[in-house]
Every structure is written in structure tokens, then in C-alpha cells.
Length: 498
Ligand code: NAD
View (cartoon, rainbow, N blue to C red):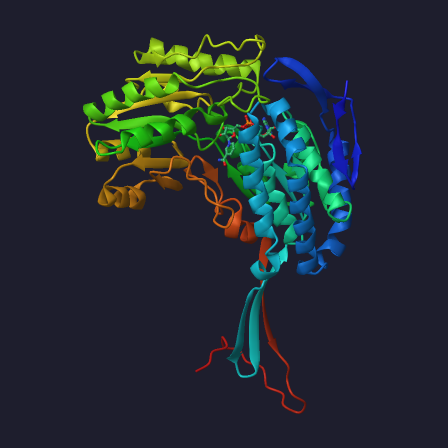
């Protein structure tokens, strides 16, 4: 069987002593195997990145940007192939895979502007004949560790900007759907990137722990679940590394009594069930303000959900596909069971969903649960499946208090026609990304992405302007050229311009 290997110093190689099955979630069958890197393999990748760094650091920014221009064209030319790989291993429908790739490409486009982004700051005559400037230097070898749910987009949040800023990169993709990620990284060579600047090590905790401890790695970006994010952040910091670790989510949408209910329902259906709810920005809780809004929401959701189609990635008429693994399918169904046992009402039940011709696939149908309360396990924890829970409250303030009390603060949104209410909400809510009648407020590539509370550990958000700061360190130079014959004596007080 085909074994997916690593990309080290420009070559794909395999250390197949340990491997893991990669499934096609629609069929439930093993599609291929992935090599799990040993300590030695990861060290080899770090050594190759370390060796490539001095030349890449000194390559003019405009030349680094040109690699990104060519890379963008190659991503577009190979889009169908990449989306096919995403579909086979992740299970998302082709139109959704295309959307993921496009959002990833937009990060490459932003990285193409790196000469402008790295221009720095300059002040002339900060003192007599003294000039001062700040410049942004690359860190060296940096690492990224990414989740299964966006095998193309999340890696593209990281390495294009890191590399454009002059760093060398080691990527540890998800071991559950690694093919598209490895293929994308290979395109960089074709785009003209020198060997060793971009490396991929497939693997598990063994590989991650090397990246967290090796002193040659200067920074780690992580995206994944909150318990692992916390581990990554704590360990990387303890080892003296810069780190940003983006974690899980529980995204609430407030549905106000004055909302355009048909529009809210359309938006909620896509944002709750698209990609099987396996998005960190999926809306998984609708908070209905007032009984009338709650009743109307449930009735209209039920209607809208009758037309949803779940199936394999290859049929683009499907709305969403399977979840990632059998174990995850059982976990999602377990959360629905627990909600029922704890007294909520399963209005639309996706637990028994099967797809003709794909009977062994890891499918869960769209599920709607009413009368959910904050003490329920299914409310507290991230389900990461096609499940929308409805909580009913009496006032908007009660809805906001509920959101603020949750441990996660990734994304949220409000559906309303009231500008004053929307403004109060966006100004005060304790969440990092806010939508106003926009269900998935994922920032565009030239802003930055990140949640609050236990959805992000670290000071800087991912991609956009924050990523330029994350992948560089500031150096401030103060310069004077004493003219011949003019020499000043020693000064023992703090220099000032008085
Ligand atoms: P995960 O935490 O299981 O895995 C993420 C990465 O960590 C993978 O590369 C994996 O190999 C590695 N990993 C797993 N266990 C590890 C361990 N014990 N030690 C070291 N490394 C380990 O996450 P996932 O299931 O792949 O992805 C889904 C999660 O990611 C969800 O919680 C979702 O909300 C979150 N996510 C967050 C964002 C965001 O931007 N905040 C974006 C996408 C996904």
C-alpha cells in the first residue's frame, strides 16, 4: 500500500518503521498509510532547514515574494487535484474543499506583498546627526502543527508568510489527512524555493515533542483542540520558544426577535452543518431571545433541514460529507445521546443516517436539539459535528452573559435588524471574531484570525498583519558617524535632547 512520507531537503522520503492508517471517511476503508516520523527523521528535517537558513535569510524580499507568486499560480493550476485529495481523506464535498483552498491561496497572495510588509520604521535626527530605525528580521527555523479539518488552508495560514519573511519551516500536518498538505508543500520546489527552506514531517506526538524541545526551533504555531493547544503553548514557552496555539470553540449565534428569520435560518443551516460541523468557526449553538423567536427558529430550521443532502465528496450536489473517523462519529452520537438523557429535545435526529452505496462511511446526519441548558455536557464541550443546539433566553443581555461565561471565545454572531443592539454586542462581547448577520466571521487574509479565552494561547493572532510580527523579531538600530576631528567625551547620564 502507498505510504505517505515526509519532505526533507526537497526530497520525499519515508521512514516506515511506524505507520498509521489513513481512511476514506465516506467509504470507511483504509485509503493509504502515513509514515510517523521518528526522532531522527525530525532532527534531519531541522538540520536541513538550519542549513538552508543563512542563504534564504539573505535572499532579497522581492525574490522571496516571487516564489510566492509562482506558488499561487501552481496552487490554482493544481486546484482540482488538491481538492480531490482533501475529499478522499477528509470527506468534505468538492465545493467546500475548493472554498478552503481559495481561502488558503489568499494567504499566499498576502505573503506576495512581503517587501512592503517588512519595510520597517525610520526616524532621521533622533539626536544631532543620529538616525534610528527598526527592522524586522526572520527568527530562523520555525514550526507549524496543524489539524485535520483544514488540511490545505490552515498550513497555508502559516508557512507562506513565515517563509516570505525569511524563515525556514518544518510543518507537522494532521496524520489523518496528510496527502494534500504534502502535495502542496512539494509545489514550492517547482515554484523555485531552495531545498530545505520548507520541510514536512508527518507524524504524531513523537514528532511534535521534538519540535517543542529542539533548541534550533525558534517558534511554534499550532492549530488544534484546546487540551493539545495548552500543552503545546506551555511546553514551547518552557523551552524558550515563541508560540501561538489556537484551540477549540463553541460558537454561539444570537437570534433576536426582530431578526430576518428566513435569512437567519439559511445562514445557520450552512454554518452549523457545512463541513459536517467540523470547523472551528461552525455555529453550534443558537441562542433564541424570547419564546416567539425560539418557536419560529425551530419550525423554520426543521423545514430547511428536510432538504439537506449528506454524502460522498465526489457528488457536488451534496451539502456535507462524513465526519473524520469512526471514533469521532461515535463521539458525536454520544453527545446527542447525552443531550437527550439530560432532558433536551432532539427535534431532528441524525444519529441513524446512512448513505446508500456508502454504508460503512462515518456519516452523522444534521441534528437539531431544542431546550439545551448550560449545565449539559453537550453544551459545555465542543462537539465538532453537524449538531445545532438551541438555548432559549429572555433577553439579549442574558444571551451575552451566556456567551461570556463559556470557556471558549472563538467566534460569535448576532442576527438582528437593530443597529444599536448589534453595536452594543460587538463592542462588549468577550469573543475574538464577531459577525453581524454574518454567520462565519472568518477574517480575510489581510486581517488576522484568533479567538479569546481558551480558544487561543499566545499574544498574536494567526495570519494577516499579526503573522508578520509573529515570524519576525524587531531590531532597532541607532547610528551616528562621528565626523573626523570631532570627538565627544564620555557621558554618564542617560542621553537626552535637553
Ligand atoms: P488535535 O488537537 O487532535 O490535533 C492537532 C494536531 O496536534 C495534529 O497535528 C496532531 O497530530 C497533534 N497532536 C494530537 N495529539 C497530540 C499530543 N498528545 N501531543 C502532541 N501533538 C498532538 O485536533 P484535530 O482533531 O486535528 O482538529 C480539530 C480541533 O482543532 C478542534 O478542536 C477545532 O476547533 C480545532 N481547530 C481550531 C482552529 C482555530 O483556528 N482556532 C482551526 C481549526 C481547528
